[in-house]
Length: 218
Ligand SMILES: [Zn+2]
Image (cartoon, rainbow, N blue to C red):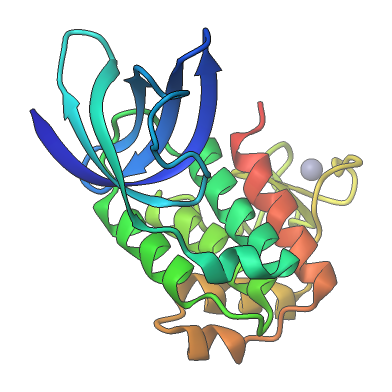
């Protein structure tokens, strides 16, 4: 049997008493667990909770979980809608970007720290920072200078690709020089204080989300 710390991200009830849990684990990345007796037991049920999971490694990629206990329920995140939204956005970025069973201990540690320290001071900016840090962590962060299709100067972006004015389509994202600089500063921020100094208004925050999603939407 193995033990791991994990942040619960999704719960899918299965029949009456069981559930399939998706959690971001400390050393094995995203994993799915089958938990019997989920409906009956007093086990943690809320996503965005830090758990200790005892589980069995079988032949299937659906691990059998024997016990779940709450290490941290982050009540402060549930006390304010903007905090809960930003924490939920961070959880979704993990579900969207990380492959199953692909270890990312640094991202786990960052997410745990951010959940612990998220405050009502502009939490959506911290969610944008987390998106940029995932892109950087996964080697995706960067703005190509030339259009992918014709080599003319880049005007808009979608995932890895850059597009000139002629090849830009609706849904591609444009950034000013200052906005690119701000996103780069977020990707490299070494503390929350550092991130809070980066100018990132509502518009850039929304662009961060769209650009991040564009890497993972096919
Ligand atoms: Zn072009």
